[in-house]
Amino acid sequence: MFPAKTYINRREELRKKIKNGIILLPGNTETAINYPSNTYYFRQDSSFLYYLGIDKPNLAGVIDVDDNQDILFGNDREIDDIVWMGTEESIADSARKVGVDSVKSFDKLMVILSEAIAKGKKIHFLPQYRAENSLLISTLTGINPFEINKQVSEDLIRAVISQRIIKSDEEVNEIEKALNVSYEMNTIAMKFTKPGMMEKEIYGLIQGIVLGASAGNSFQPIFSVHGETLHNHSYNNIMESGKLAVLDSGAESELHYASDITRTFPVNGKFSEQQKNIYNVVLNAQLKAIEMMKPGIPYKEVHLNAAKEITIGLQSVGLMKGNVDESVANGAHALFFPHGLGHLLGLDVHDLEGLGENFIGYDKNVKRSEQFGLGYLRFAKPLETGHVITVEPGIYFIPQLIDMWKSEKKFESFIDYAEVSKYLDFGGIRIEDDVLITDTGHRVLGQPIPKTIEEVETVFLTNKPNEIK
Image (cartoon, rainbow, N blue to C red; front, top):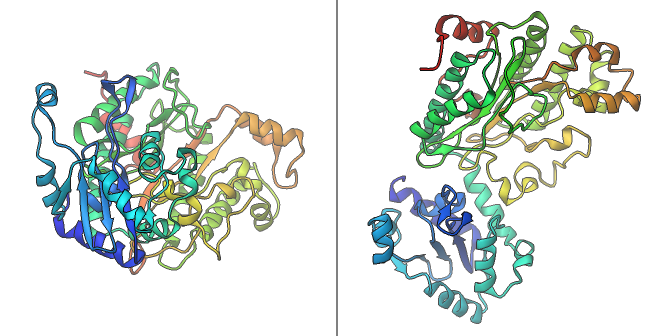
């Protein structure tokens, strides 16, 4: 965890923003897979980590704004648990490390909140994504569990976002620790991929890297020769020569800060001319987008410029035509680039989105588009110093979407469907990096991972092992 002063300062700043009442921060519990004692990997709630920093299950925190007091609720292991799981640091000792002096047993949480409610105090809580915590809050407050997320505190949502959205130097350092693991994951995948292997062999290899070098995955990795499926979590294809493989993956640092990197590379180590043409369109769009990034520029503008670069590039290879600005304004490019350019990154790989995507990426001045493609842009507001955001344009040839648009004669003045039909088995290409917004511009975080055609092919040519040992 960070030094205690970090957590004390975060809670103090939150108090100033909330003004009155009690802030309830439930931690996560262990969740059963198929019977009670066989549980999923434990991941602490990100806002609990941000303010209280303790990476253990079955805890809850209260920040009493009115009485200027922080309380941690939880129970130390009893002897039956110690027999099976051993001893661990006491909750009181953990609490002191994050600057909390008051520790109470978990059953006292009901007492404290009941007294606060009886006094007319407001209980502030965030949107919940786990049924266990919705039921806990329901029990503590009397709110119907199905109504919990309708009665969240918008003041608390906005206050937490305003703090967590700006990354400190120590947070950026954690993200770069995760990116060190991403470098290993991506380069090892390039080195070992070869025709005839199954996707799951490489998936297993990168899982070994991430589990051995970090706190685990920041999300379920995507590795597929069917890159036209944006979030493809199947690993059962045999990789054939001439196909492209898309690896979209990330790690978490020991303090659970995320990385998120995508690379696309040829299974046989050599891009075909057709693949080179499309790859360089995506790479150019990504590099031009990163060049634009600085405080004050709306990320929606960066996204639309990337869409224009993709349109220009696709015109150069004969897949699109007509006026570029009109094409992008109408959303014709979304046949090939149907998602947003990127998302915030931090303690969550899609940082803060659990608190409400429209709270973080949009406001009264920046409204979400209803246009296909552009409507998926997760963050559109002006960039600020301290934002960490992904930049991940892509080009995909999705046969079902192409067939549908073609049958509807959609955007025929902008799309050459006869030429597009030659790419139906192409797959997809995505290239992604994580970028910090600085006072003067931006910085691409982490050790550079091979990205140009020459760099990717060099990894294959110079480091390719004959077999997995």
